[in-house]
Image (tube, rainbow over all chains, first blue to last red; front, side, top):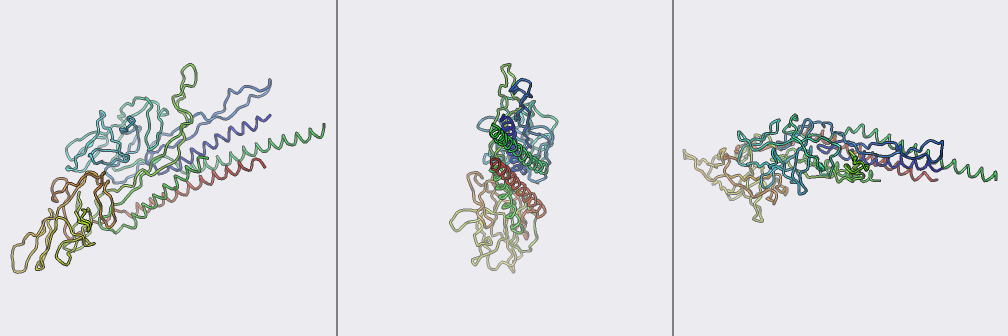
Length: 243
Length: 262
């Protein structure tokens, strides 16, 4: 008979998680290349009937985190080492734990003259090699297809990779994704924009309305739960008098 | 309630953003100043349900999984080394660097510092010094009888002496460049110090490959763009506000929970 309480609890847990996800989205409203996330919720259909001829109990379960890989707005920064990706693709950086993928194209040059991200991970070019810049030569220019040149000399090409199952990418923080064994293929129809940064694709207005919806739903569920409790209290009292 | 601490990381990040922007705006008229930008990264993710985990004996796998992020952190605050515009000053000892490179300055401690601020002057012994009175390296001394000073694009300092028709060279200004200029350590006073991340300096004459040229009678203005900074400030302030809304929402939910059992 406490079913209503447990069903309410299952919804409360998913609502709290939704709030955590919305909080993370809003915290990353200004993080380059960040992709907005949302919690997917389903009713669990497999709960058996408790008694014959009754409705099965339907709990609420969260069954996945969806990430919207839609394009974020490109913002001009006039920094020659900022590269924004237009289209579906990821840059590859080499970390101590193997290759990682990112949409954050804000690069820099380290003391060994290598093109790296701001954590110092070397950026992987076409064919898996790193890109080394000659500081004595002219400024870098990066073409739409990723070709990097200094004056007339080509020094490398930025590679953009693509994955069959974007949902299988695991976020590991630092704006990096772990491919978890998926093999990337070359993304040929993306264009790279020098001097641009891809902004986060979080739409603050949606997140704020989400926040309202979450808090209100939470209140409603809590109310339902206290009403259930009131019901059982009064039932106990009345039945007690009758006896 | 993870949302509370997540929102707190968001607010802390935006605070840093506002601090960076305010420093940029404060240095809008600082000679040779390069604007800074705070770069953010997402924090660690917690795996509630792993993507790729088996969901049945038949080998079906969970396609997406549940990962919940824990907020944002500042990755780095870096300088944008974009050339500032050149401002005419008419001062014979002002030099603007057009392109790559830094002037070398000797600090009182004996260390060498690097600067883009070329508003130079002469001290009581005739030595060319920065506005703080630190001598420029290699040392250049202007004789007292000089009536005019010319600094060429390639750094030769020449003087004219009354009664002589030819100019004579009294020194040569040099520039130092770094592989990773972003790694230089700012020490205030428009000065930078070499660090492990910057690599060692590469010294050469202005105008050589890889070095900029000098422009006498000009200074390099700060590359801060007021309009960009103000719009960034608006964005940062709003983002801060929105994160505070999350704190509100989480608080409301907690209070609802605590009122459940009356």
